[in-house]
Image (cartoon, rainbow, N blue to C red; front, side, top):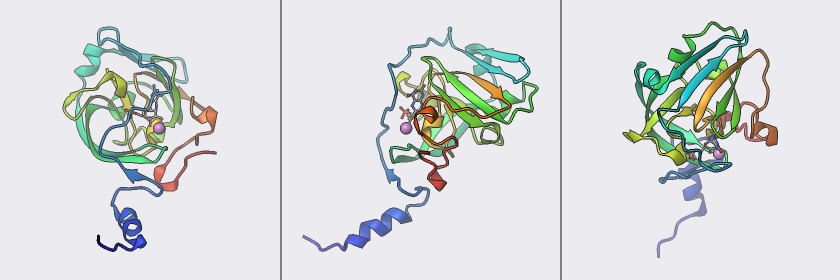
Length: 197
Ligand SMILES: Nc1nc2c(c(=O)[nH]1)N[C@H]1C(S)=C(S)[C@@H](COP(=O)(O)O)O[C@H]1N2
Ligand SMILES: [Mo]
């Protein structure tokens, strides 16, 4: 049996590049859902952006899937402390979707099939920071992980990445979503440990 100083693992852990404070690495892909998994067929799936002025833009699955697609490899961080590095996704940038609507709103609420909501500032959806993804690791996104499509906002804690997403509501004022109403932080930056409030 070798002797390993207690500080050894501690140092290594902090030294993992890409691992925010208080997080540990996981190799598998945990499923975290607040309720039952909605089963939404692609032919009934729709995604709608509503603006603060009452406008709306809606995409059917067919329309969504023919938009420009991006492949992204990103790290994800759950507030319950697991992080998974280098995850691969395919989907449509929020820049592409938001460019279809006229809006100056600074806040948004994501809405999911099943009723889940989460609030995200529009600035956190813009400039290549967020996607609506429909593939994980080269395969169709599994229902447990939010298929047919989910939000992916990897620079915020993973509760912001709404599974089974069905729309985005653009708002003039910030308002808490499901977990934010239950004590989670309004913003959720893992590098600043914006976990609870
Ligand atoms: N619709 C919906 N989206 C959700 C959740 C949920 O319960 N319902 N859980 C959130 C939380 S807390 C996390 S950590 C991630 C988990 O995604 P996963 O199950 O694919 O790992 O989804 C987020 N998106
Ligand atoms: Mo989470």
